Amino acid sequence: MNETTVGFLGLGNIGGGVVRLLREMGGELEKRESVKYSIKKILVRDIYKKRSIDVPKNILTTNAEDIIGDPEITLVVEALGGDMPAAEYIKQALMAGKSVVTANKLALATHWRELLATADEYGSKLYFEAGVCGAIPIIRTVTDSLQANRIDRLYGIINGTTNYILSQMSGKGVSYADALYEAQQMGIAEPDPTADVEGGDAACKLAILSTLAFHSLVPLDDIYSRGITTITPLDIEYGKELGYTLKLLATSKREGGIVCSRVHPTFVPQTHPLASVSGSYNAVYLFGHACGEMMLFGRGAGDYPTASAVVSDMIAAARGEAAPQYRMTSESTITPNWESRYFIRLKALDKPGVLGTIAGILGKHKVSIASMRQNPTGETHAPLLFVTHLARELDVRAALAEIGEDIATIENVIYVEDV
Ligand SMILES: NC(=O)c1ccc[n+]([C@@H]2O[C@H](COP(=O)([O-])OP(=O)(O)OC[C@H]3O[C@@H](n4cnc5c(N)ncnc54)[C@H](OP(=O)(O)O)[C@@H]3O)[C@@H](O)[C@H]2O)c1
Image 1: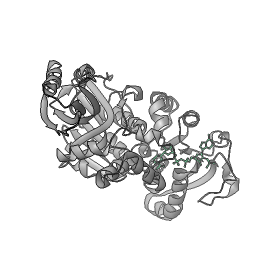
Image 2: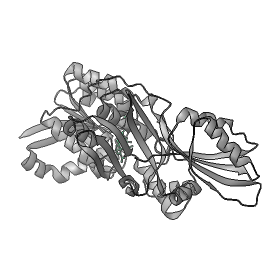
Image 3: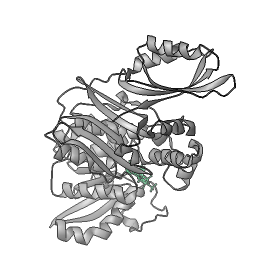
Image 4: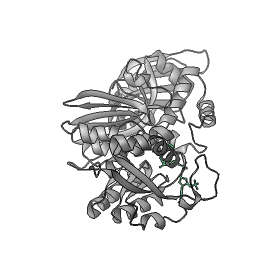
């Protein structure tokens, strides 16, 4: 039997979920996996706070040193959240030779190089399956199962909150604000939803996943990210009429020698498996040159789904199994000039010649139109919609900058991915 003394940093949704799951499954894990855990200390902010999980008060502490400085504790489970002090505690635990299991994508994506270098230097291990897509074993799939592949495209619905909001907007025709409010009432969105709805959470996960999948450092700062706050039911409705479903898509592609990673609202064909991923579910769809296409689907958040991944990493740590390695074979150069198709919704002056002027400006900037739709309203300005063929980002931006408000206002621009 492999007996491990554990210290927890955090006893919130995830820390509490892991403790609960260990209590429920402890006996089975002992028999089946020959691992046994004893929780010695748990770091919290407030020892006297009322909690949904009962733990003896004497194992709670507000001093991280009680865990990091205790040589009996060989495994640390970090579920504090936020960048600091979490990243510093992870680093100190690694320096003390402990294994660390974390669910914290922000700390990891921000301090990735430093933390893995510390683990290397001190011969300790850092596991982070729970940091990307909760219960879905995407880190292991990429690092332990697909080594013989060159992965050249990867698409993910990797934020459950935004997927829930967009699914509600699409299914019920409600506004972004109403869908967000409902998600907050249900506990699917945080009271401050910024990290989710602005795309920051998905960008952290994409930085980690793409670095591993492409063996090429994809720094968080180099990921273009745009959230869903400007999406209207009208965008979704027009997209549906054209055969598309709107998702907050995290995309990484190898284009020549360059890895291009971005997070933004994207129309995907209604017939594609990613379009059917609704509610708060997550999915990652990727292409390897040997394995072909593959999609992993499941719960990307929540106490038990995330605890499922944390406990799996705890078992790997107890057995001394290798932690995911980051071996860079090429330095990534991020291009701001990627290629995509674009959905451009405008309100144009309803008079002869305007359509031709706009089409002329797009053409001048090498943006060719795949389809167009005009809804005359009898008013001075009428809705106008273009979907382009593949075009370069900088060309599209230049063309849109040239369309003056005297002829049209740009209402929204959304990427279209044929996946
Ligand atoms: N929630 C999810 O579905 C989910 C899914 C995947 C990954 N994650 C990640 O898991 C991590 C934890 O999330 P969570 O939802 O469990 O957060 P949470 O419910 O807010 O819990 C945070 C816990 O950490 C403690 N804590 C925070 N800052 C502290 C500090 N400076 N010193 C001491 N204790 C501190 C809190 O103590 P008190 O209890 O005393 O306040 C609380 O117990 C985050 O990195 C998150 O991104 C969450």
